[in-house]
Image (tube, rainbow, N blue to C red):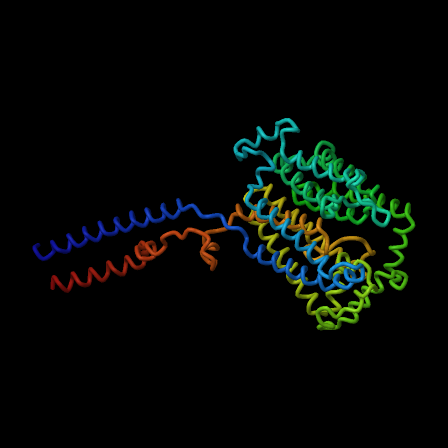
Length: 460
């Protein structure tokens, strides 16, 4: 009996030790669950945007210094203006990315008060005022601030030239995201949901832009709105019927103006279009690696809008197919990051806002590349972050600010955070968990057998 007492004491001690380990492990897990992570921005998106801005700044200077000198100005004229627009856009992006995107839904946002927000007065909703302000800028083109260029009034001059149709895209993204998140079931209804207010607002905006006129902006805005409504849960049959009616109306509007039909004919016969012909010459002359940076021949007064709408042709001529593929790779990665942010968004508003920004950038890239390569009719759609123009740079950087605001609150798992290199989060004390891990069932059985074997030998 005296020989077996130490065995009982050892069993009792091991039981106490087991319970102690279990309690300590539970405490560590509770501490880990209570850790408040510093919400990170999507640094990959920031790096990609900076790379695109640097790429665009170099190519704007290369494409514009000759035309600037011919006009009697400094060769850095367009470079300085583009740099000022980038600085303004980056400042706005930093402000927007640090603002909670739910502020556009309600200044005192609380997810538990969604029913209350839904039944507010219309003028007490911030996203309504955002849309009103955006649509109001469209009317400024008819004020003394408006600029008449090539028979169109599409821009306003406030120190830098701004195209209000670009600002409307931001207003629509915010309005659709907030209003659908406020009442998600609205889109399942046609008359009192899809038709009003969304399609009614879209029709008013398109009517205003049509008389500027800016047919390419109408096409981009319509595609943006339809894709966002589809992501938001609109019935595909309803969208299909409206789209069919819209295509018929588009064909009718094309016949009203002869220059629109001429652009369709130029798409079939590129020899009849000076712009498209010179753009294709640039692509063919560039080859695989291009003539070299600054050595383009088409920018010497051959290719119109070389620094803005057709800057991709200059890139193809100077940097070749390799430079174009690098640029498209950067855009592809940026769109991919936008899709990931939308997938990981914490709520429907974040999903729609990130999706809207990503879709808008993707539409602009696809249309611009299609125009420069002769796959789409010639039209004035800029290449985001690359083309010269104050409104394009500022507007798209503002959109990136919205995207980063969503990424800051995205649902990223702890394991994914711990795999990142940059220490922008608070690490939980995982070493204590590994050192004091609860023994598995199999290891407990092996230890019990070893103790029984030792006790048997001890008794013998």
